[in-house]
Image (cartoon, rainbow, N blue to C red; front, side, top):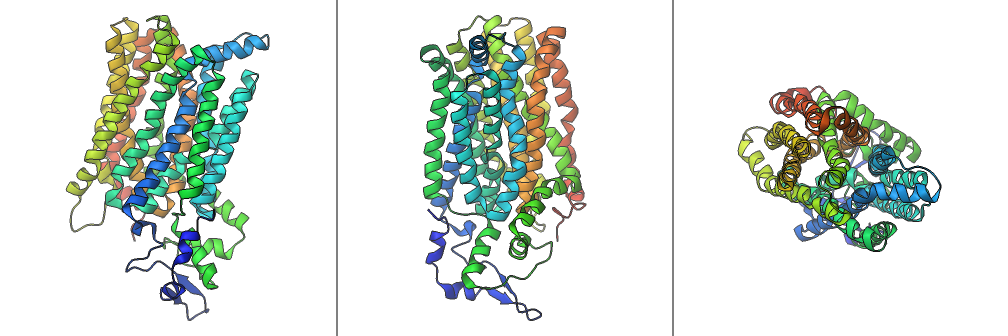
Length: 499
């Protein structure tokens, strides 16, 4: 199905009425009708836009189900595959089997985001989803730990939602209405992160770990079919490029400050040149923005604690609390419940706080998204310390699970407002900006969890987790600094400077 078909039903005269001819060179400027253009994603029906949000959420659920589903049985998988090949299993291989996914997610956006800014969201999303399904099948058929780790890395590379979901929401929703859809997008993978381990523990004890991956294949395939049939292009430059081609006009080059710069770039250069320029853009955005650099480092450390818990909780429950795999998987529900509560709080307060703090005589200030992030930044280290000491002192299971739930709650409060901030502050460059955030986040999530077990072995779970909590606490002032001085700091970057 051609995603542009719904756009072809409009009358050509409407398009001609909203193009402007440049008298100096005879070229044209094509734009949306400011009085209400049916092709403008922000003018689409609310029901359709929320349908797209739910579709994005379903795919995000499927991806996280695939990613986290193997966590409770990672040790068993490595032992099974290494036993079949006559090798000794390794605890490092078990951790890498989980975290290598994040290394793939650090590499994939380097190509996914630039291609989406040249060809549009729709074709890139569907191509990435197809590769995701193929690589997941490869994982299900793997006969060695090495091949399964490679398959997991490639699957992570093909995840498009992390970088494109916030950008698509930014395409469709005005600034003041993005809090709720952002919350839904954040909640979906958290549900996948809970359901995946719970199902995995049950399935692994009955039919085997490969069936967990085949379930992931089925979920992703259903999501991709829905994408092909229902999704429309949302990226403004891509829509306007197609409009210009239908009109048979030459689009003039526009200034850098114009949000249709990508439109002119794609029309006046070869696609490979545009892609290369877009590939370099995340690095350019990151290098020019001290705000993005600070938030990327902060978000990377915060997010990495999700994998610290994911890779350490199964071992704690198995060795200290003597839990079977089924109960280990079900225990991940506590993190999701806490995360869901955090998402509900953000959904209720994120837009409300922004509107209440916004001065009526000034343009929108993205920094007003950050008060909840400030609260989450300073409370997350406390929950991490509680988690470590609950395991160290062998406190009742309820205390350990409560610490995991609180960690999920504070982690969401620390991260979700940052995502909204990046979309608001970087506008048409949000995909490139979020790519920079994802790369640092994924690199930290790949390697930081590998330090948790050595720290616990050397210092014990209590002081080991306190050491990681100290790193988190050292970065807690970052959202405070951005909230106070972000407007001034943004003026130093051409990608966020207010015109």
